[in-house]
Amino acid sequence: MARELYTARLEKKDCISESAQCYHFEFVLDELERFNFAPGQFVSAVAEDENGKPQTRAYSLASAANGKRFDLCVHRVHGGSFPYHLADLPDLPIGGTIRIHGPHRHFVLHEPITDSILIATGTGIAPMRGFLQGLFPTTGEDLSQGKQIWLVFGTRYESELYYREEFEALAAARPNFHYLPTLSRAPESWAGLRGYVQEHVGRIVEERAQRLGLPFPAPAPDPTLLASELKFDIYAYICGLNNMVSGVRELLTGFGWHRKQIVFERYD
Ligand SMILES: Cc1cc2nc3c(=O)[nH]c(=O)nc-3n(C[C@H](O)[C@H](O)[C@H](O)COP(=O)(O)OP(=O)(O)OC[C@H]3O[C@@H](n4cnc5c(N)ncnc54)[C@H](O)[C@@H]3O)c2cc1C
Image (tube, rainbow, N blue to C red; front, side, top):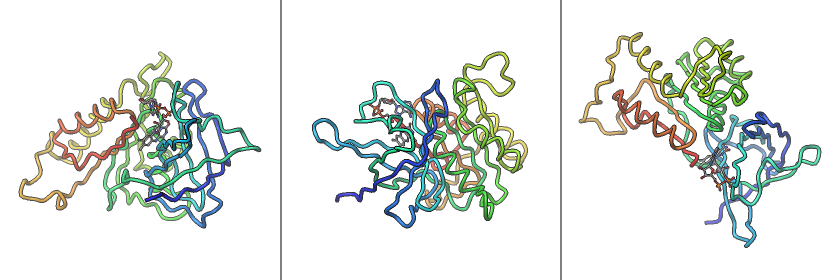
């Protein structure tokens, strides 16, 4: 079945890291009353290649639903094979348009909201920004319900901490949100966390178990329960390239976590 294609008009484009060639985009879908999606979902950009064959690339929505608007956070991959790169859309006021379909898939938060560890590297931050906008809207009700929400964001350098000011401001305003940026190639002057996301995720899980008096590693769930009957009081949401995603999944499984507690999106 042919998917419905929409034309999205560029309204804002910012290079948010020159060194990593990462861009923040804001688009508007003029033809829709409202673009409804759940934080964490993605859209597919469509373009024809030189042989007229349609090519698609998935991009996570980097915002929560907001009228006809949506944001993307896209890294320029050198030697990429998509017919054009979003980063090459002309700057405003000329702007430009892209064709998309979606929203798609199920990288979404479990309801009811539980304690959650959001783990991202690189542009894997995009759906996490959407989750956080959904949980902590700037106007209206706080939907986090007082649950503890950690964002562990790994990059190489400080210049690649996308949306840093936003997350720092959120952490200062919401005591149940914890922003943990970690640099794998930190200079000596960096006073924050160092190393890969795995190390910090491990610490969060262990300290939480101690604080709540829970066994660590966690015991296996009751084998007589169906998967649909299992209830968890914490989930992990992981997004980025496969290497990191697999590493974190392995780590959490080693702590006795059930596979249903580990929700992930891989970009490659
Ligand atoms: C569900 C889903 C959501 C995605 N969301 C985003 C997003 O929000 N932002 C984004 O930049 N990309 C995202 N991607 C990746 C995106 O779809 C493309 O694969 C990427 O833009 C590269 O396309 P290309 O044509 O330039 O290169 P290709 O020729 O398709 O890929 C070249 C190589 O680039 C690597 N690669 C793919 N994505 C990235 C990345 N983000 N950072 C570093 N290396 C990468 C892969 O290993 C691949 O082998 C997502 C992918 C999926 C499956």
